[in-house]
Structure formats: structure tokens, C-alpha cells
Image (cartoon, rainbow, N blue to C red; front, side, top):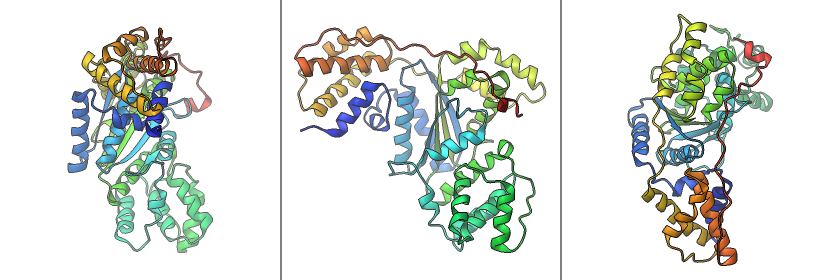
Length: 398
């Protein structure tokens, strides 16, 4: 009888793509850094103290796996979790694109699929949570767009308007003129903005609004996990510096949205290749001589970020023991193999954790299929590069 959860886990490990299921069962490694993260989550849940941190590690050494472990830990603490991998389409210097992608990948506790609007839809206009959110958006945000938007969302009976306002909350921002038109139709009075909302300048309002909303909905906080942070290194000089400024909104307690914990995963080579290699501190002095903060503090945090060290021999053997157990459950057989033999078979894969895991699975595959195993063919993973992409015209909109 095959165990399909075990099969899913082995296939995820074989492909080298970490998953939350894997994180659930391989969470014991690196107890020191997990203790620090757990303490930071407790600060959010118990005291409402927002904070963030950066972890670094070599390519293939388990950064994404660690994020998946934190994902499960945050959910167990009744926190909303959002997961984002930076990319060319979602660069860190454009916070409005980051917000949109984060909203698409937001998971409520006890939910396997992303999405939160089904819970927002339950809020009616005459409830305490509605009153609190309207008061918050009127008093505590840089612009009052979200006051007019959320009030319209709560009171409209037009399904097309409801959908349009909902997509705005999810990051597909509607024009100010469209919102004013909707508001006037519903309330027969104009929406008088104190400051005209611009997505490139005021997107932080949305993070603040959503973090407050999640807390009011009864969750203990919001965990934001951001992977592939090293892709900032492929941006142009000015875009990189603006990306560090955007990161500050997730890392520095005085700038973070309330009740949030944010964790960035960064390649260990970023310090040498980008911060030193591209002279980031000098670039900051050149472009922003009077406004080096908060980007300078973010550069300091990146430089001093705790690094994921290679697992010890005992920790690796424990991982291999679990892989052997799950491989047996996945394919309905009993691998009678000493862990030392399996560990020896992974040496050809190099020192990286990801390649060791894939080499172990290939070795077990051969034993299962043929009753014997030869050398594994898994090689070292290549290192990432930080060649700058050719900037688009949008890169100059600052």
C-alpha cells in the first residue's frame, strides 16, 4: 500500500523544489536559528511587536526549506502567512508589484490554498470590525483612499462594483476617479482625498491596512516570507537602492506594519558579489547623500545576517534516516540499508544539502528498482550570478 503523502514528499525532494509538506517533517535541523525565529514570532503574537530579519546561506543549502518550516510554525501560531519569491516580474524596488504578488500568495491558518477575501466578505457595514477598520484607515494612513474604498466595499449592492473594489484590495489598484464615482453614487457625496493616492508612493498604506485587518479578524499576526532576495542584485544601481528602502518597511520595527514578522532569504554570496562588488555603500552616498537611511541600515543587516551553516554529520544522518523511511512508505518497500552506507553514497553529490538529498533519493531509487545501486549522477548545483538586467523605461520612474 503506497503512502501518497510520502510519495509527494519524495517527489518534491527529488525535484529539488522545497515544499511546505517537506518543511513539516524536516523541521528539527538548525535549532539555534529556529529558536531565534520562534522568539520573534512570539514577540508579534504575544506583544504585538513587529519585526523582521534576514537569513543568508549558500545556494542549495536549505534557505527555502527553512522558509517553509517557518510557514508551518507561523500557521501553528494562528498567523496569516504570505510567501513571495522575487523575480524580474516582481522586483523589490516596486512595492506595489510586491503587494500584488503577496496578496495572491496569502494563506490563512488551516487553509491549503491561498486567499482571504472569502473571510473579508463576511464583514458587514454595521459590525465592530467594520467601524474599527474605517476609523483606522481615516486616522492612521498616509492617504485616506482606503477609507473611501472600504466604506464603499461594505455598502455597495452592485456586484460589479463589489468585484472592482475587491480586486483593488488584492493589489489591482483602481483609478482614483473610478473610486470617487463609485463613492458618490453610493453616498451621494464626494470623496475628498487629503492626499491623492499614487501606487508608487503610498502602497505601504495597503500593507498597514491589511495587517490591521488580519488582527481584527482574530489572527495573531501576519508573517511575510520573501525568497530569492539576491535577485535584487540584477537590478540597476538606482533600482537596487530603492529595493533596500522597500525592504526597510519589513525589517525596521518603526517602519513595519503592526503585528508583522518578515523574513528574507538571501544568498551568502550577495555581500561579496553585490554589496562589495558593486560598491553599494558608495552608491548610496553618491545618489542619496542626505538620505542614506533607511537603506544603509538594511545594507548593514544584510552584511550581518545570520548564515545557515552546513548541517553536522549527525544532522545529515537524521535527514537521511527520514528520507529512507519516507521512500519506503512512498513505494511500499523496506530499505534494509545502514545509514552510514546511504551517507557514503551521497558524497558524490558534493557538500550542498540539496544535492545530498537528491543523491540519496537516486541511490534508494536504484535499490528499489534493481536491488542494487551504482554511483549517483547528481552533480553540484551551479552558483547564481548577478548580471544586471537591461532596465526598462519603468526603472526611471523615480
